[in-house]
Amino acid sequence: MNWYVFLEGVISVLLIAGGAFAFIGSLGMAHLRDFYMRLHGPTKATTLGIGCILSASMLYFGVTKGEPVMQEMLITLFLFITAPVSAHLLAKTGLHLKLKHADKTRGRPHEIHTEDADEKPVLHPDKGH
Image 1 (spheres, helix red, strand yellow):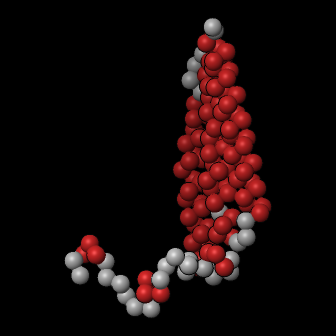
Image 2 (tube, one colour):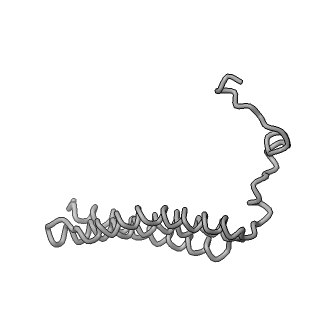
Image 3 (cartoon, one colour):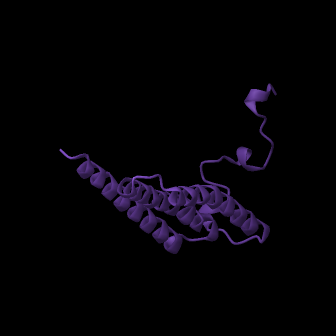
């Protein structure tokens, strides 16, 4: 069996997975309720989707040209560095502007008891108090 057939299969899987992740991230950005929930779509799923697509492009053009493809590598590196930083800055700006939260993202989930939230301080068990 020719190894190019295997390589075409890997490239196809990466392209399909990248398209699926990018689509899911776009849907998340369009359908989630508030600003903070919408940050997760483009920063997690879409970044992974574009990373898969760029990896497929690196494999394809690396094999057809026979030389390493630096352009896609630099784009992938830049994307994986800038996406978390920009998401952090957007979330910090949203907190600074006091944007409204959905009820589920208020910071007081039902699992936290009142003594753990902010009524009285709870001492940390690892600090010996």
